[in-house]
Length: 241
Image: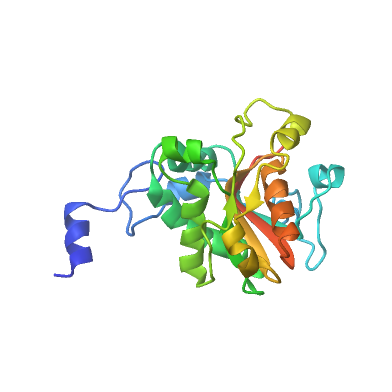
């Protein structure tokens, strides 16, 4: 008997959301899949948020938020909205040590960002400050970046970026406060600046809200000589209404 078959006999695969039995590891049951707000069809070309109506083919659609604030990156994608099961999955990864969510998310992110991968980008996670990393014990963005790199066979660099300044949580801040809080908080690690020069970079994070974190990281990459920067998040917080 194969080891995987034996393991499944002892520990049957369970749905990432509800715990129901499923056929494969790192999967959702049919019910939870239908109730997870995956973003298909029309979406903003800069942040990935889903938009009403159908995709406009090659036309790049821009949401209201991205019309209202400059985005230093070139293109953006998201796998799902940060709501319902989307929120449950992100919080499980971020605060409940559920690394299996990242294992599942790698192929999802590869699908959502398929067009961003054509240029063979350097996949780079958003960094955590060492204090937060010491408390959490892992960087959820790095787990997502690694899973995406495995799924796509693209090069990834887990410590390309550093966060030398400890910033307070973004929770409860308005858009202006979020951008001010992240001002100059992210830099390229001096040891890796040469590897970033002239490359297209794909930044990875678990959630995009205002885009302040992605903006700070993008500007750091561009200052280091990156040719262009794209971004992808597992979940996008959508404006109510």
